Image (cartoon, rainbow, N blue to C red; front, top):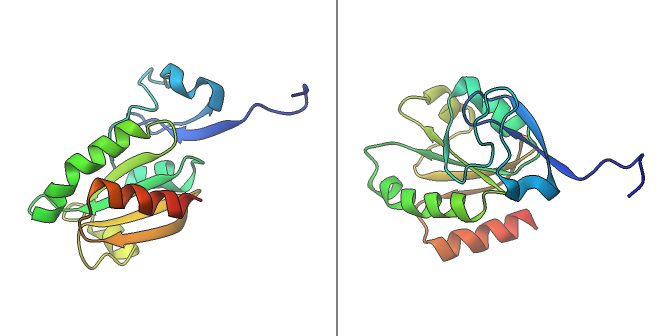
Length: 150
């Protein structure tokens, strides 16, 4: 790499203050912190989103984001929660898992045409790459993600 070539990096949003942070790929495993609020950036936990934080996490980052549109009363959504928690932990440096409560964020659900829950939408740089409705097991979800990201 020469002085004119920047190091490969991802742009991710801080889960706490929603600031955009550039994280060099070589440092992603070093638990980078937000320079503004000092919170960990790549936490390995799903990030709850609302209409105010959605753009920062989904539209302005380079890190792919898997958004789970769910509701607390939904049985299949509750079944998916541990699968998504595990996925967020396993792929913390390569993918952000986010959650949108459709009861509280009806405008976002409407914007993306959510008609059934759970619905998972995979985004990269604000563009929808793939969509999956209904509960799936961890292996099926992993295969679906791998296909969508390739």
